[in-house]
Amino acid sequence: MSRWLSLVLILFANWAHSADYVIAISVDALGSQYLQALIQADQLPHFKQLEMEAAYTLNARTDFDITVTLPNHTSMITSRPILGPVGHHWVKNTDPAADMTLHSNRGAYVAGVFDVAHDHSLRTGLWATKTKFSLFRISYDAGHGAPDMTGENNGPNKLDVVVYELASPALTRNFITTMSTQPCQASLIHFAEPDSAGHTSGWGNEAYNNALITIDTCLGQIMDLIATNSLLKGKTTLIVTADHGGKGRNHNDADEPLNYTIPFLVWGAGVTPGDLYDWNTGVRQNPGTNHPAYTDPLQPIRNSEVGNLMLSLLNLGPIPGSAINTRQDLRITRSTPADPVQAH
Image 1: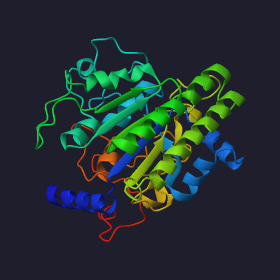
Image 2: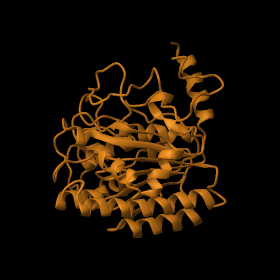
Image 3: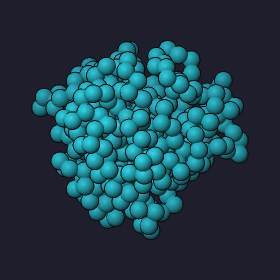
Image 4: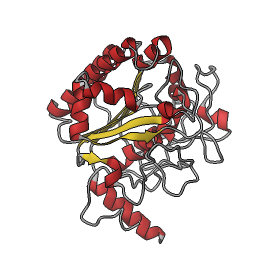
């Protein structure tokens, strides 16, 4: 397929999926099996609403090699695998050293979703409930972000808003206040409580379930904001996924299905409710219970789709150097007038 035809197909896909604001939420340790059990028990009304109104799957995948928090969130932001020649190579899951960035660790600049959005004069934001997310604040600050070579010079600081709160309800209140006054077009939110409860009491136990109920309340508040705020209503798309699941009190085994099987839900502007795999026949493949490697010709939907999906929704091109969803062909709707994905 020619370069020009590829560009045309991406433009058609972007036209079909347009949004003015995109919010990505990562629920730390949200394993699909535990999520579905609580939905069926009517314990998570807002996640249940998402299942009814979103394009979604509960059979998405994490990174193939590593199922821990910070490396998988780095994949979401950069749309790269963790390892390999195109990987971002961040494997640590602790607070970074003061002088360490994604770029110094890899030996080359690692662009992310915030680079592209910021360099196109959009406002960007990161809300997190773990201090280790300082990695992204440092990597994309005024001293470490790349020069803006796109149109107007917006400077090297790629993140306009960075907020840390220990608890998700407080983080949600801050997010709602910001989005009601100075909204960000590209936002990533991280909720940590299910992971903390899983490590302490076990995945699927009472504390873990209660943590998901707390997150469901936060999710409902954000969905209500999107549905009622005059600026955001009808112009905002929400992405909800996870960095990993868990089993027992851990999630380090990347070959464990309970660790690598996660949800991926897209709700709001430009979305046709239904099964994401049905909307992506020919470009993504439901893996069943399998654990496909990156070398498989048809990939499952992965959490690392997030960065390039966000940009596609914002009518922007892919992250430089990215390797996942680089064609921005993950469809969140049944079809488009030109049916660009089927043309692949």
